[in-house]
Image (tube, rainbow, N blue to C red; front, side, top):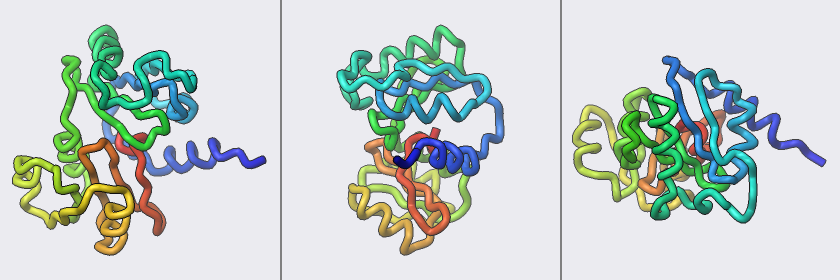
Length: 185
């Protein structure tokens, strides 16, 4: 029996480069992300809906569903957190809430992440014009929606970051392109 959790947590710890200490609330949607986030031991964080439960009692597995970010917004306000992140049930998508409990659009989150990464970026065709305009100082590769297409272009063009409006964020590491909301958070 292989324990995949420990190697993945170690990989994330190795590749997470936290420049500033932020107070963050994580909502794991009663999915597998809770198992991972708990072991990261990030300072100044609170975790909600961390226990995996296939019935998804908190708000369902899809953070894009109506009302799915309500618990997170309340927790961010209550904790006076700087940021909130909600993951889908398998942890490969992330959506964010600002310090006032307001959702941050995925293309805007991609812009914030891209500002911390040098070089070209890959964005899906749904990325808004303002985001592309704000990143006009670098090469932007537009891509069809879908993990296959994003990973292919990210690898072919040797891009260090890609994003889709669906909350998928792509990071090439050691020859592989990871689709991980947890890395984005």
